[in-house]
Length: 349
Image (cartoon, rainbow, N blue to C red; front, side, top):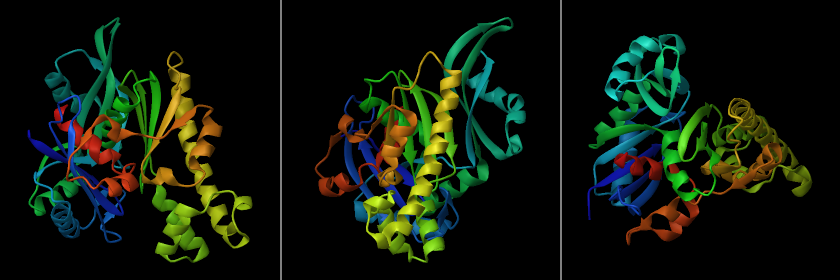
């Protein structure tokens, strides 16, 4: 077996990890995957607040999941990370990255010295001033990235790369849904929702919406006085149409419906913007992924709002599963494991 690497998706409620061998092969092998819960408040919106607590959880994850590799690819994708379309003069990627701090300060909400910058090229055009590279500027607040890396280091692990979660999502889902030229991948996490529009397998537009599945749980707790565990169970089992549930669940259904409408509106607004700016490649399907995508009624509302097919991801169809993978557990949580898989596959990029 070749070198293995572990994709680690640190969420607000849990940490998910997928270990992949031979990620450069056409059908890489998933050798292990596991998930452990996090104490409330240890991570907020994907940003580590309590490094030692998260390090302890990572150690537990490694032990319980039987992970062998200590090489980790981390994902980032919250309000402290942005991806924006920019154009820069054509030059080598080394030169592009060296020039970024001087070219993008006006696009950033924080001083450039406080950020980590990268550029993802998408296309090339010729202008009156010469050839230009069009692509996505990725900027992350150093403090947010360093906090997550510190937790990994405290756990005795080695961060070999930090990847943008929408890119990880694209990497794995584009392999599984290559029949569509232009698609939108929507990953509903606990604290954020990532929307990435892809044309011919290449990310063209990224938006991170600061809303996730944990928001509806918090609303049920705050507005209906539910205990957190009760609210989480209600979120997963009650539909968002009052007429479809018993009378004593109408209030919860109304809260869930309100959340669903707001999230669908944010996604629809994003896709409308993309449609207006890229009329030659209309989105023909939306792939809905992530743990929060299981919210009852969300897929149906999104289908009605967008008028396109809503597909469920089958990310693990493009990999082989090793003998140590708990197939029953993976069947339950494969949607939530999609980002971790994409991060691990990114080690070959």
